[in-house]
Length: 463
Image 1 (cartoon, rainbow, N blue to C red):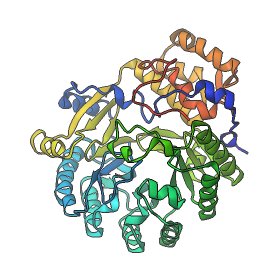
Image 2 (image 1 turned 30 degrees about the horizontal axis):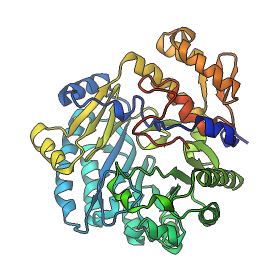
Image 3 (image 1 turned 180 degrees about the vertical axis):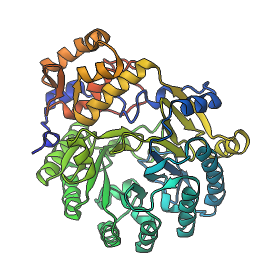
């Protein structure tokens, strides 16, 4: 059994350390992006710090959905009018040409992801066209060896859709499920029978998709430990390669669609903890590896293999095997990471269109990493991806003396060590089985931007 499969539930520790905090898809997090940073300056700094010989990761954001899911916190546009996508795609192609000129060149695209919204909101012909445009502007692989993935709503796709997706080069799918209980589905406005999901998954396997992820959410209205256990049993029967089990954060003041969810229908904090506890136990018993941060994978999946070999990475799409890629993100609100620079596109469709047409860039805000950010980013990445931290490795990479540089942080680590969240062997810290569920809290120790001892505004609870 690999170290990544071991998770120990400790209710006392969870209750003590379960604050609000970042998910660390980046460090510094998007909260720190500065709207006063000039887009041209950000782009110049990004080009200067990028490795033009390294491969690329591409992300494309399609914001449209035909139906609103009440729990959703994504940047989306709800419309039944499929024609709205046309103008957006035209702007996307304009931005694509601009970004390819800046960051494309001969760089191979090892990773591609379409997210949203609902990417399959656009027609099959438009999906073919979009992929053709990507191939025209960027150097996509033709040998099916890249990780080319797309998020799919089973209510918005069928076997013909999957055949088109496979034909144009996708080899990974992520299917939104959330919950299979009819009462829960009705309460969140996402009615999706098991047979619908099962049929699509079987079609995907026939088409030769090499990895299928299913998304679940715990903490939704009317969920109970028993109802979610029933959902999980049906999902395990489907045997996805990966599973994401996300915590629903009820923030109706920030996300308008969540106002449709009545707080009194949500499971209690204790019930939520029980749901998560039992879900982890059941998934481990079914043979899945706990990758970390809500993610599970079969032992032979590339994520699990990368974690065992020390090659796992984390970016704005979550866990990934492509640590050496710069991320070029296209579309409204999309976030790129090029070299030592992060930048985010305009958040509203109209301002995005105007920026692309008038400024030759959709960038709205961003951040140029300081030397201190780079050190802390490496520390947090090591902890959140591999559950360990090698002081000597950080010293050699950044030319610091770890114990001097992180003296205050090591004082906090002493408390974690007392509580058995971490343990030390020589100059390496290891996150214990009990500490893995609290990895976000452990990483917060090294976050220079947020307080450690009180809830942090704008972030979800750790558990």
